[in-house]
Length: 208
Ligand SMILES: [Zn+2]
Ligand SMILES: [Zn+2]
Picture 1: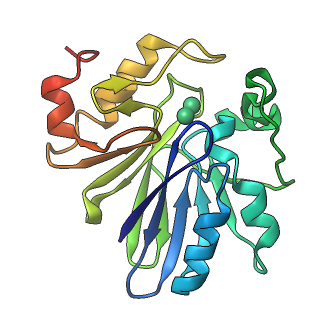
Picture 2: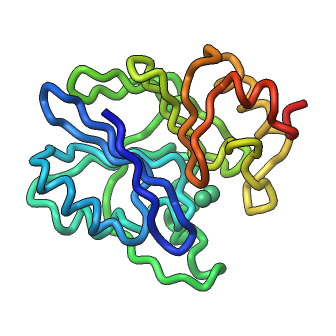
């Protein structure tokens, strides 16, 4: 099951992936205001096991500290090592005039082509630099879904003018891991509406 929340000053989409049998849950890109999701998880008696981070921009990690500090058991936090520097720099929050507190933790490396197991789900990690150096997307074949962070949006693509960004690399990443997926795969971006691979192949002005 996938549930979407839109929260925080930058209207971030945060996705909760729950394995129905075990009630094991993963939260993708927890933003500021994550308390609302914590309450929902508690109410539903889901077992939040991991936080999956597509990239370490502050708006996608704004809720990590709250989740990690309030949990009685350890939660695995995954992101790609190439975004460690961005994480250490507070995700660029200061530059945008935001305050961000991050917990001290050793992240689990979300490496290209690695697989993360959540209950019966297999989550495939795909390294997709361009928007940030360590950007990844999480592909869940069983749900025909890709959680794509700020790589690609409905009829748009991620900005590449921030430190470590590259327009050429971004397009390459989209070609490698998004356009190669079946047309009916859902794309769940970090901001805005969901879309599909087929829709973006046909109608995304940045990819034509
Ligand atoms: Zn971003
Ligand atoms: Zn973003």
